[in-house]
Length: 218
Image (cartoon, rainbow, N blue to C red):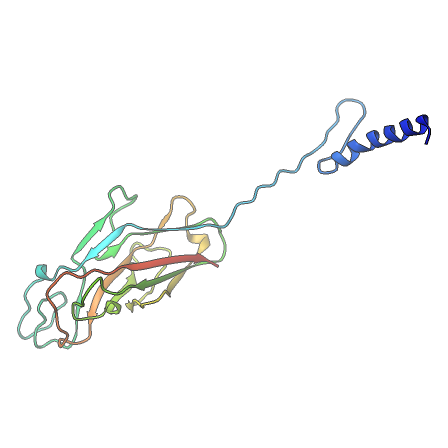
């Protein structure tokens, strides 16, 4: 190839480059003023969920009233011989200072939920672990949970008293289009211990366990 043909081929290559470089945008527009070209702006936001439990619960049996010898009433300790079953509700709640909104109802935990997807449902699961050591005389799965309908407009959680399981188990779902994106939405849960018979032993000591809650979007 002679020098002239080499220069001509090089010039052709240089002129072809701008067209390829502009292919991702709106292209080259040349002419009388004004001219326009465009660029595409793309934003990708991952789907996220958030959960925040703000409350710890305590059942202090030393603070419960003495029972009547002939009747059976909730929260009486020790249980009367007349009892075949009795409910114990937590009598102490500790909620993180500065939590937005009103304090939870008695016996309730403050649960906040968040999802940035606005259609479909959000699944709430819960579980309870083993005692830290020893046993008070009843299982951790005797803890029961129910949603506090007075505060939980999203209806997340069981409508009736439901025993916590030892593995993550669905306790309810809420519609994502009713969950506020910001701020996080509150979904209070009530707790109690249900003792199926007065024959259960109560072993002296202090025992702890952890209830875990998990949410996922569908």
